[in-house]
Length: 295
Image (tube, rainbow, N blue to C red; front, top):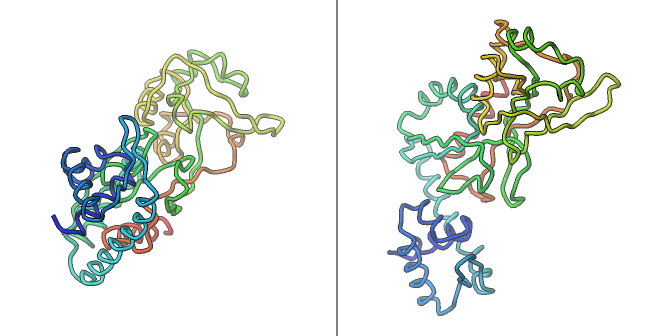
């Protein structure tokens, strides 16, 4: 194992937070990662990590070594990107995305992206779960909500609105809520409470901004399930505008409180490691998103 590979294992352990997570990113066992870190420490003559059963923390020597190691890795990646410019990319791009964006907006764009980069391999991980967005060797994550780590780089992809809606069959059986207070009498289909967008925000009749935790006996961790249940008449849901556009147009869903939703749009963003030099595979993907959504 060469010095660059040892530094890559070290940097990945720091950024993923554990030897186990680094091993998953690099397709290595935790014991292999631990041995490589020990080999690096022996070669340098310093201890880089304070190890315990529950945590992994850098020593002062590790803190000093980390930025230098990452800079060395970035320099190699930049050199490789420069060499590969104008040639076909053959790397693997790992993209984590909220499922609704991936299904409704990203998937239809992929034929054009594949025509531009036919040899670039794509791996998608769809998840709404909170946590380390870039764990497992993910190059870029597409998400909504608060950014958990300020050291990450954020790039805006798209602004969206939330739509509160229900099926005609549900409204015929249970009536149409006239305001936010009336939602307490209805079955509200919602994301699990640990999701950052489980609170419903919109403007009431007096134009005051309301933020409520919509109650109900049914929750899910993905918007696709919420939309399917709303279309089936199970209850009222708050979903992304791009997700429900066709169902609203066809009449399968009816928008409630038109004009009263919170006009502040949520932003869908791409997040990636704070690196001075982007890999070529990530650069072409981000540029493609910029161009696609600018149009």
